[in-house]
Amino acid sequence: MKSKLDEEFERLCREKGLRLTGPRRIILDVLAKASDHPDAIEVHRRASLIDPSIAIATVYRTVRLLEDSGILESHAFGDGRARYETADREHHDHLINIETGDVIEFRSDEIERLQEGIARAHGFEIVSHRLEIFVKPLKGGKRKKTSRDRR
Amino acid sequence: MKSKLDEEFERLCREKGLRLTGPRRIILDVLAKASDHPDAIEVHRRASLIDPSIAIATVYRTVRLLEDSGILESHAFGDGRARYETADREHHDHLINIETGDVIEFRSDEIERLQEGIARAHGFEIVSHRLEIFVKPLKGGKRKKTSRDRR
DNA sequence: CAACTTATTGCAATTAAGTCTCAAAAGCAG
DNA sequence: CTGCTTTTGAGACTTAATTGCAATAAGTTG
Ligand SMILES: [Mn+2]
Ligand SMILES: [Mn+2]
Ligand SMILES: [Zn+2]
Ligand SMILES: [Zn+2]
Image (cartoon, rainbow over all chains, first blue to last red; front, side, top):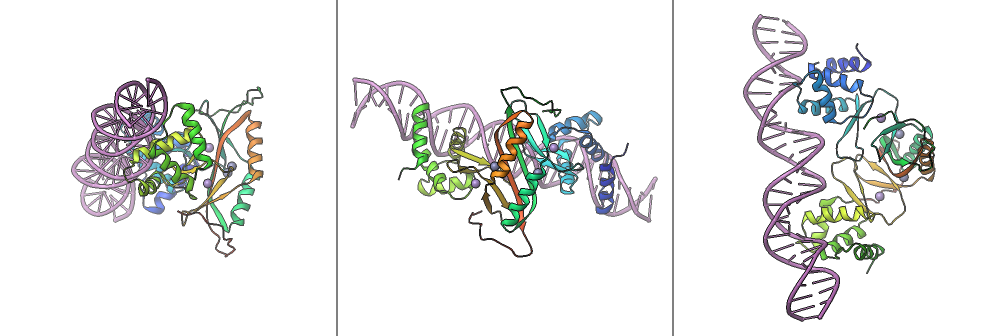
């Protein structure tokens, strides 16, 4: 099935004279289907299951292309590698469980609004931002079953 | 003059059997005096003015040691390098002017409080967090003279 | 202060994420 | 299908950071 992302990417290709190649389709597909935040190596591993000839260099080239086009977002959570997710959902920030590496998404309109105010007070407008909260489980139980996110 | 940081580092050395060496004193001094957020290469450059024989490897080793001891904080603003600042001041977050690279510090107790609430609602407690807002100047003038931060 | 033990240093080699070069392969307009 | 152009895979390269190692310097003891 052809997703929103596929259509957007096709449009982009036509617009910029880029080619809709096999590797690009597969990499975009891997990213569209991911419900976690894979890094380039993990994207390559998943893409390789579909076409083992895809090179890691192509993964790096493609995620850069997609990121520059606004189709992908990259994050730098603790470890050195950049991690990716498609930019087709509403903006959110992340809680990272430092004991398990699980990533939990959240959104706070209040925080978003406060950030706007801070930027404006300094004479700026926000281009982008990142908020990452590194957490560990509360000892005293009170756990919600929220961490569906792998790694 | 001997700063708070120096004393804390001396205590740490005694505690862990570490040695208070020339290079360590100089690197800590450079960091204590910095009012910006220098990266390892810049710290090395400044340390070299005092003792040209200091190796970049020693800078990397020392900032890691200081960071692990909680004396230094490292940040990963856009560019690949880690940037450092001493952890002796009150917690704050950063606005980064993407046009100039200037870093502006701010603190919002409201945002801090909201983060606590979010973490707790998910059954976690915050270990650390980072909030970085990438901004550009508002076209319509309204500028405050706040950016005292170099680089 | 001199001798001694052990941590630390400078240096060069190494690692690891990501980028680049280039000849071969593949898109795609005609 | 042809021909032009972009993209690819493979491997070389770049850059921040880490590590191995022999030489050096801290700190300790007498
Ligand atoms: Mn996410
Ligand atoms: Mn700061
Ligand atoms: Zn946000
Ligand atoms: Zn904060």
